[in-house]
Amino acid sequence: MPWGDNESDARCVILKQKLLETAERTILSGLRHFICGMARGCDVYFCETMLILREKYGEITIEAAIPYERQAAAWKEDERARYNGLIGQCDMVTFVSSEYSRSCMSKRNRYMVGNSSMLIAVYDGKPGGTKNTIGLAVRRGLEIVEIEP
Image 1 (tube, rainbow, N blue to C red):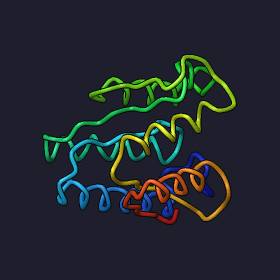
Image 2: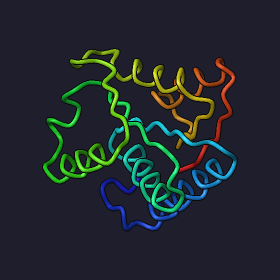
Image 3: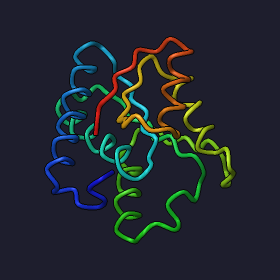
């Protein structure tokens, strides 16, 4: 994200509010199970958002879909602590691969799309994993909500 690690940047604060509003609308529409990809940045923000909303609504479940078991091993200590704390609060944890491979991130994305009826994506219009995941969701006929960062 353009703000890097500075989550107090106004753009990050606005994005987190958009995530909260979007996720709350999906809960009010009847969705109850949410899968978080657990990458740094927006995935972590989304997981934190869902934990806040679980406190408010109670009946939702949160699944961490992790591309490989040691995903956070090389992250900074504070990022690992945040990540591990979030995983510990999720209702389910799914490791898509046991070890890193060039395809483990796309396998995680395919898993999430294959087990969802809706995709909420923070997307800046650039090529990459998010664009590919949106393409998968389109082909599968999922409802898609794109949020600009």
